[in-house]
Image (cartoon, rainbow, N blue to C red; front, side, top):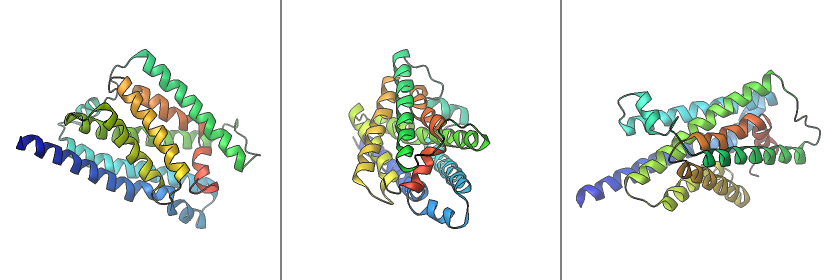
Length: 233
């Protein structure tokens, strides 16, 4: 009995540490950091800076998660996280559909703030931001979907608890530095959908990547630009 209690305590402590790191390192990207960049840099450089910091912040947190996981190798860690694991075709198709629809939602949103935006233009900047954002999204899913949900699964939490806790943390650090109820609900819903894909895909990250990384591959740099044009929205 004591072992079970200790294990649960360890899991929740690990989740609390990761949540705090997400709030401190990633949260400012949805608050003051973009505006600090914008004071001295062009919009394109500011967007690139924000995306690079996303990558750096998630890499730092992932290093902490790796230490917590006590894996013997990075390959073992990634495998246990569900990267490359087999998943159902239906879950992958659902992830693909979610990715396309969510990307279209971002692209339609940018037109509300910048009607003259050329959404079809392909250039070096767009390719760079798409790759940076997709890499950041993958690292984010390794943390907020795989690590958090697998930790909860380890102590016997229900699938609903796993999905809701993961989505709540996802929504929390997206909105904590400039809280907006609409943004919180929006992030919560998206987090639940991604968590659902992780569970439906038998804990494989493949459908989650399709539902998340595909969004930014299609919608960058416009998705990040919304942080500058509509802060807190």
